[in-house]
Amino acid sequence: MRHEPPDPGYLLNELGYVDEPEAAAALDITPKTLTEYRRLGIGPDYAELARRIIYSREALAAWLARGGTRAKELAE
View 1 (cartoon, rainbow, N blue to C red):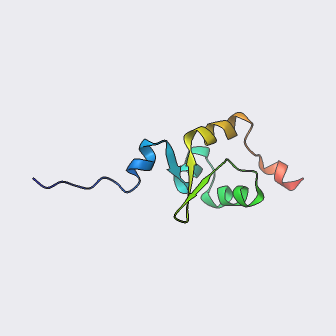
View 2 (tube, one colour):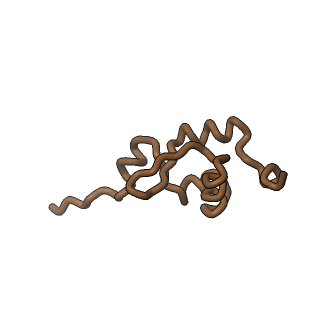
View 3 (spheres, rainbow, N blue to C red):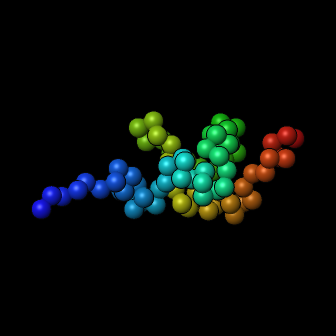
């Protein structure tokens, strides 16, 4: 019987982290928008792991609870 290795993101997912594309999809924004929010310092808290941006589910929920960011606020 051959043992299949788990998905590469399995452990991070089990620990409550998602990568940038998954976080953007959950927030219903594009990954490019999420990257811009991070660059401007107005996005959810994140961590960098081996040059990979990850977000905890708690950070995403907290950011949404604070009201997230609206495009019109960026124009001000």
